[in-house]
Length: 536
Length: 61
Image (cartoon, rainbow over the protein chains, first blue to last red):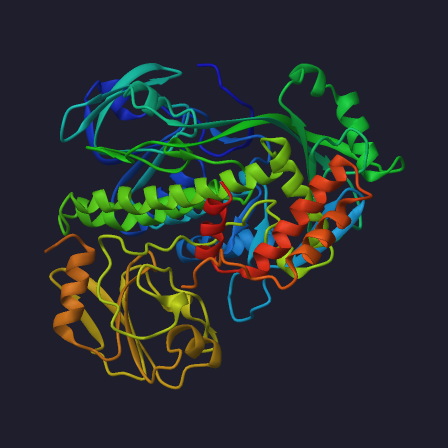
């Protein structure tokens, strides 16, 4: 087996398993293909819930190269619930300020976190291999405590046969092929998803005719940890746009937009890359090229993320341009959306149809990301003369007038998806704040010397503010954790009460809001919970 | 929702037309295109109402 890429960290070296020697075909409840950020997040979430999970990865560790570097607040909150949020924060570079330049001039700057009272910062920058490494380290901790999870490295899925209510897989290893079966197969195997290919499923969308050069450079520099973005940069050879952004370990991400007709090989010559970087950083800058790559991108998604017993998550299901950090961040949201639903289905506590809501909600999320990403791309790469005239007019006006700054689009940064109007939603009987409406993910807020999201334990949560609720409710086998808050802090009151005196929220295991009312009503809570689990 | 006003609304229309043309008099074609784009954006922001703007986009076809 030839690896497709070099690994940065060898985290799951190949080991022969008993099933290979015996030839016995073992059935697993859940098999995840692909150990990237999405697969590992999903695996961790499932094993913490007690659902046995097997991860198959065709390498023995994490691929080299920083790739995804911007992790958004929602992702950090999910990682925190799963136990590796602190590791991400310790290593990552926090940033809040972005500066936008047009030619040589700064047009404006923005700050992502003017509002206080969240545990997680708006964003951190962190090379993708670290994210994967910390997730695997957390999995190892769970494993040591007996959690039902196994990772098999150098296990490449070479055929997939959908047998209706289960899937038969053939897996190639350094010791040859063996077969196994899965009640549920989750393909987290990336944009070129071999599972998707083997099942002959289409992946349609729009190709953008542009090439972007990434140069990650290592240097000691005292630029602030801010996102600097240039339209039509003044430095030579930078192309149509450029980006400078700090990562840990003194690594800086530099992006140049090269256009469509380029000689890829020539552009990747280190001397040519260094000439561009020198023009940007100045002739005296001392740096090493750490990782370089040229990418083109597409905005596309599968029509359906669920195909019977096979579900797709992350880049295998949807792909966007990198502007806005909506790739890995949306994939991690896929994982958390799927984990609790799959867990309930595997345990027989919810019907299989609950998994259709995974498709509905995350297809909606993908559409939102594709829309934002497409708009950003059209702003970055105007498709006609007039489109460019308007784009430049916006940039010129943005230096002078606030209104035009709102139109400058160098990527609309990932914010949590809101499942407005979708099937699992229940009552919204509280005239409460918009930010915590039904379908939204819970905004964090200071609570009890820590933060509200720290108090959620991965079950359904009944959050009562200035209202009476029972200590613990159990609804037909599904646990509900109750949190009662009297006299909430200001931020919590603003985010959950607004002008109301009291509120009761029913919150899903993935921290999205199911339903909310001014006071507790057991029948309504039971109905909303059953509805959110697909149990009518 | 307000309607798009397509009835006469500018006092001294000839005077306004003069000013509009005069604003372009010293500009090259490229500069004029850029000027028009800035002007459209400024006026659109002043109107603000998306429904009115959509009707204007339609009316200009």
